Length: 166
Image 1 (cartoon, rainbow, N blue to C red):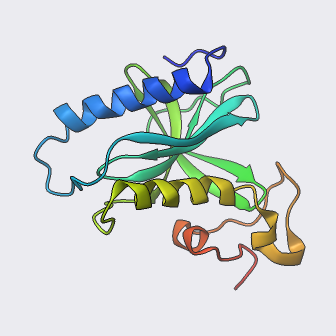
Image 2 (cartoon, rainbow, N blue to C red):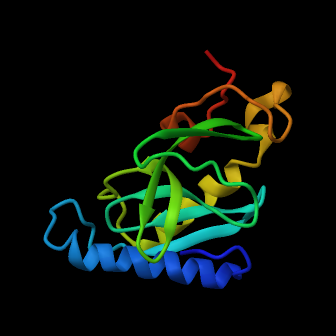
C-alpha cells in the first residue's frame, strides 16, 4: 500500500511493480497488449494531498490518483469519483490493487495498439498530466483550481479541446 510519507520515486516504483505483475500474470497472452510499450508511471506529483500521474501499460494509459496524506474519498471498487482540475471535471473509477492499495483511475486510452514505441506513449501520458493544469486550454472562462468546471470527454481532453465548447 502507498504510504503518505513516501517519495515520488517510491510511489512510482510500487505502482510500476504492481502493474508489471498484472502484465505478467493476468494479462499474459491477451491480444490487446502492445509489445512495444512498457509499464511506467509518468508525471507523478503531489496534488491536493495525494499522488497524481499517468500510468502507461501495454494495454492502457490512465490518469492515476493514489492516496497521500490528505483525506481520501474512499468508495467501493468500480464506483465513479469525479475530480476537478483547472481544465475541468473528470470521472475516475475506484479500484484497489495489492502492493498499491486503493486508487482512482481515469482511462485515457485503451487499448494502446496505435503506439509504435514506448517514448510516444510516455510523451502522450506526460502531456495529458500537464494538460490537467493548463487553464489556457479553456480559453477565457477557465475555472479556478479545485472548482467544479465543466465535464469534458477524455477524447476531447487528449485533443486539447475546451470543456466550454459546444
